[in-house]
Length: 539
Image: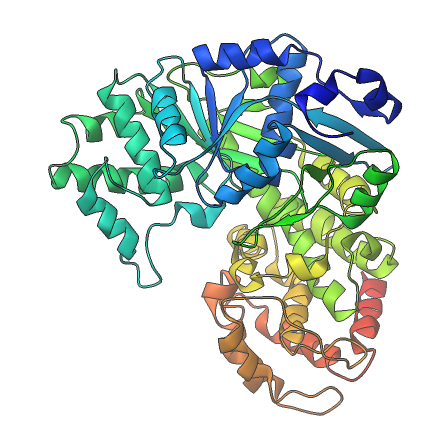
């Protein structure tokens, strides 16, 4: 079996293999999309195929939509050329459920796939045609948080961005530059309204997208390169909106065990593709079952009926509350806890950590006991039920090939939000005592121990990439397992850094406690496990 429109006609072989096929007329969908496109998506990676594309398929299957999605890739053109077009823009979604069952679904909701490449005249012309269409309602994005960045480390605009500012809409060639060129084309061809919807997993994602787009519109206006009124068009929410959203679904790289299972049932398009830009793709995508997408309901030209597929449309304030609930209490802090202690205890799969009674109790206390008293309750989702699902279904899922090493990446950039916001709430509320926090500080001490790059058995390991590691590693370089040291002298420069923790931990009243835990964690081989057991027994 291959992912080709012609092969889908032999439904019996697919059904025999337990693979669900689309229930709509794909040719009719393609024709309707060509005539009246409604949705373009930038970013052809795994999260798109596993989530937004699957949502639209549900609408098409149920007759709640007639058009499909036009996917456009502006970073890695090989994804389109190698993992989309050879398969007629079809893909196979493998949903890995925690109870051991697997769902296999052919995703056929894409009407066409395009490169955002000025050098590809046909694709660029088609994008211009689509952006000029009055019917276009939404352009969505999964291009990662760094995709919206147009400045360098020094805060100045990158060289390619500056070049675009001087080149103008007709020649701009950076990713965001080409997007804004297409918006300018829309403005000069009728100025129909449009929603630009970031679906990337970052806080206030709509603002990040707006800031990038607005910078181009301002520069081109100042340089006399934009049509009169274009800047006002971009800055008018009634014309061009930038809704906030919160997305949550784990879609790891294509997994070898999934590949093997698909080959055993007769599916042949399983080749893992690594592009020249080091993107990992395949004709199939594996993902967990749980998924959340909450979007600010700000669509000046109407929107697809995605609420019928489970998307929650709400206010900007509620989107922010859902984001805070997830990032500060109900998911991300628990993930970071498992990442730090998983690496120290030698684990290579997150799901295996959930068979460890000590680690399970640790994340339960941090989530339910220390986090929930100050959780931001969005009203539309229950924080407690969200944690229940994370700890009972999502994280223990043995079929999800996720690792503590992956989650441990960039931890210095995460601690201030994932734990610092909770500490601030404890300080701010007179009915709470910040010194009652015992296990969030244990994660902070554990992270300092993790920076040593030595596990609980005394074996070295590779610390995951982190932009502050080169600065922090020398601070703990003198610490040796089982040897006495001046813990305060070692940790004071780290624990007092509010940029890392969100607060100066000494000023917050927690620094000395973190030091004491760290001293226990470095007592010798097996000290990490012993420290966990000791404090968990007292909880």
